[in-house]
Structures are given as structure tokens and as C-alpha cells.
Amino acid sequence: MKSLINVFFTVIALFTFNANAQIEQCQPWDAWQTFKSNFISQDGRVIDLGSEQKVTTSEGQSYALFFAVVANDKAMFDLVLDWTQEHLSEGDLSTRLPAWQWGVNNQNVGGILDSNPASDSDLWIAYSLSQAAILWDDRRYSILAAVLAQRIMREETAYISGLGLSLLPAPTGFEFDNERFKLNPSYSPLFIYQQFKKLYPHSPWHQLHEGSAKLILDTAKQGVSPDWVMFDANNGFYYDKKTSDLGSYNAIRVYLWASMMADNAPYKKELLAQFNPFIETINKRGYVPLNTFAKSGKSEKRGPLGFNSALLPLLATNNDNSTVMAIQQKLMIDKSFTQTRYYDSVLNLFGTSALNKRFSITADGTLQPVWSTECR
Image 1 (cartoon, rainbow, N blue to C red):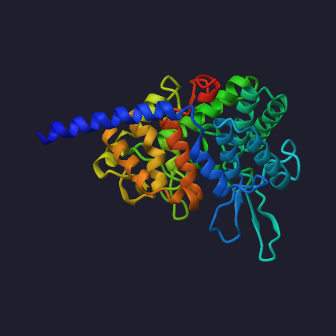
Image 2 (cartoon, helix red, strand yellow):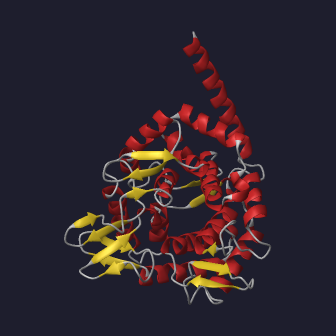
Image 3 (cartoon, rainbow, N blue to C red):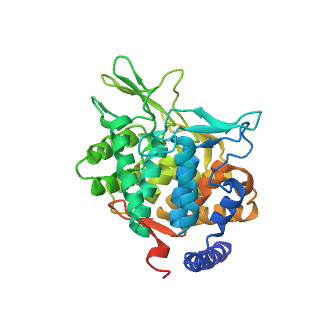
């Protein structure tokens, strides 16, 4: 009898959730407003609260651009874009890829702390610009996206024997002697490559898509992805003392990006199958682990609430409804992190908006915010 009652209440809860999600899609995005008020300055700088130098990264700027498009918030998009261009790219994104890290010193003077660009952020900036150009019919965005995409291809990729065309994490510092490379699977959302393949057919984005898919799949054979991995052109993937098989704050995005892909997108089925052991672990424990280990597939400790948010769409795709509901209940009880913890807040925005279908991404990588189709 108890099991029947539990099933009944689960069905009711899911029905209520689905109904609320459908209503929420066309309502103002409260979570985005919370993020803006807590993490974005009046001039468009995303601040990692609590960091010693009030750090801003190109990553934070790139994600804010994406969320602004999803929210149909062109005013904030332009603010974030202008700040990024002025402070991270010496005034011109078309001539300089944005510096990775900017901060404020003891004299309250801001400046670049690390000038090396981060290729994943550059991809997200170019992608957000390309989609903003389409959705808001702005040719300026389109031109800037095309130039950025060209610079990424020229400055942040390498053809690696045995792997193919691959994304380097930055223009310098990740390619070593004897054809060795340090790579990051979470830096490559496959749908961005699909979209760039469509928009820029004369550049080798398809090759980069294929090489990146191989990187993601081959480094997660035990069901979990590493944060970083080494690759030797002669011997393949490996780990060493400096680069372990740990998966945590980087790797969590691999599962998130996979869940955002269209069901008929290339490699979506293979990725879902690959990550199924991790999904089973989450279902058994009722939460997302903090650390995983790619060589063994083992995991440990409890991840922060942002990790749980990030896995919501993948769990939903796998029809793990009870786990989805349990995580949502925890998120409803404790929302304090959305006002204090930048990275958890980013993961939460991605995960919950994807789950609630505030946007979708087609098989060719086209972004479709719900405001552009169903909320007019």
C-alpha cells in the first residue's frame, strides 16, 4: 500500500512540476535577475564573489552573454560585451582574444591578472554572439562572431596525430615536447562546433567536432570524465603526477553540455550510454558526487548544490524522475548559494533552464530560446 501511495504522490508531483515548468517558460526569468543583482556590476562585469581580488574571468563573461540571450536581455548583453571587449581584449575583440583573468589589487585598481585566453570561454562568446545576431537581427554581432571563430580556429587548435584536430585550452602552455598535449574535455560543447560548421562551412569545424567527440568518449570509458588529461601522439591518453584522473569542477560541465544536445544530434546516444554508470551512481546515492576518477569510475564525497543542478537535465533525459524531484526539493529549500557562489549559480542557471525548456538547441547547434518561438 505504501508503495502505491508513493507512486501516486510522485505522479502528482511530476504533473505539477511539468505544469509549472510550462508556465515558467514564458515568465520573467527570476533566477537570471538574481544572478544579475548579485554577480554582475552596473558596468557589465561578472564578479566571483569572495575571491581575493574580486576576480572576473572570461568564462563568467561568456556565460553571462549566453544567459542574456536566453533571457532576451539585450541591454545586459551589450553591457557584458562592452566590458569584456574594453577590459579583456584591449578594446577590440576582433584583434585580441580576451584575457582569462582580471582582478582588483590592494589599491582598488583593476587590471589583467592572466593574459592567456581560455578557449572554452572564447567559444561561448563567439557562440553567444552568433546566436544573438540571428535572434536580434544584429549584423555587428554576426561579424564579430565570425572573426572570433576564425581566431579560435587559428590560435587555439592543433592537429594532433592519433586524435585529429583538437581544441587547446589556450594559445600557449598546453603543448609540450615529443608531441604531448594537455587537454580538457569540458572545454568542448559539441553543439557549438555543429553550429559553427553550419555558419562557417569553409573552416574545419567538422574535424574539430570529431576530434573533440573522440576526446570526450575515449576519456570516459568507465562512465565519468576527468577534469584534465594528457595525450601522447604515440601512446594516446594518460595521466601523471601533475595531471590526475580526477573529475570535479571542470568535468561536471561535460555531462551538462551533453544533456543540452538535441536527441538527434551526433554522438548524443553514445554519450548517454557512456555516462549511464555515473547516472546509476547518482540515483543510488540521491546526490551528485564531488569527485570522480576516470580510470576506475569510482566517486567520492558530496558535490555542492550547483553540481546537482547541472545534472538535472541529464537525469530527466534518463527518466530518473524520483532523483530529479529529490534534487529539486533540496534546491527549493536552500537557495542561498544563488546569492553568494558564482560557479554554483552558473551551473544552476544552465541546469534549471535546460530542464524547464527555457531554451533548446537543435541538432545543428542552433539556439532556440522559448521567447523566440512560443512566448510572442
